[in-house]
Image 1: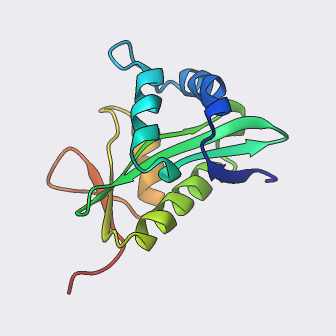
Image 2: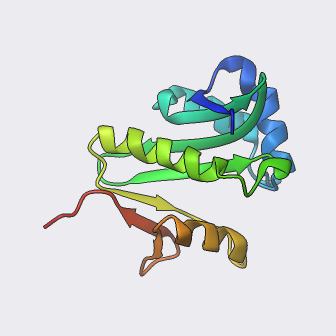
Length: 141
């Protein structure tokens, strides 16, 4: 894999939205451009883009509220899935969250998405007593 991971740049927006659509992440009730605009206002450095040869091929949008970290919009171009890029993006998001003192990361997946649930399971995420998944980065005791 020759992809590099870096923070989102304004020029990435159209390519990121196209990637999210191709990966099946967009929904009619969420305007991806507004999601990007909001993220640019808060912890912009946690909005990650993977690129190769100038093409956006992956994303991860992370955030930390002082209690838990979250990752949203983990996306890999359909023709690049299964090659480790999703794992690389999650590892980078986790590393950045850990550097901020984040003790646990949560993700949410849509019901019935067994392939994504299996992906997160392989990364060490486990079902919480809630609808989200979590992975402790720092033990509390």
